[in-house]
View 1 (cartoon, helix red, strand yellow):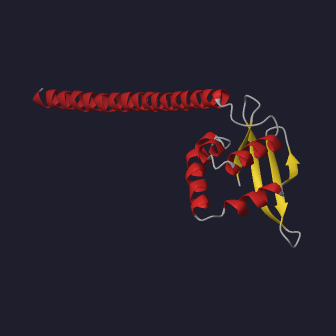
View 2 (cartoon, helix red, strand yellow; view 1 turned 180 degrees about the vertical axis):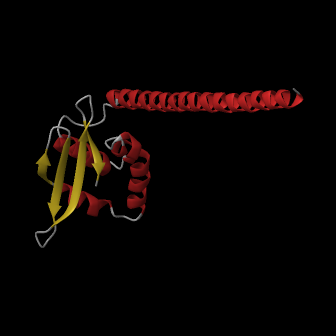
Length: 162
């Protein structure tokens, strides 16, 4: 009888242990999946929130023209007036500060006339619904300077790269 009781207790102990292990594994799997879903939901929410903020900034940005050429002309006019803060506003929002500082450095090195000379030679290369490219040829007839434009959701064209 004592032997049977020991076997019964051992079976109950092992069975209880297995039950606890499987229950813990199941809860961990469910919790882990739930946690992953929550992390993903938070990430998606943050991205959507940033996208909404970016779109709102773009919609509020009125610096630029209704065509790439008009934006380039506005940019050139601001550079000619040495208003580099205004000139930088014709770039897409993430690049404005970089270009404001860059234009100041170009001015410090007395290279503004060279930049303006290249910009005055620009000709449209391609125009799509949301992007455009302009280019200028050098003295050998080779395209050497390129400008890329992006159309903002409010219809304003912005400089992307020079």
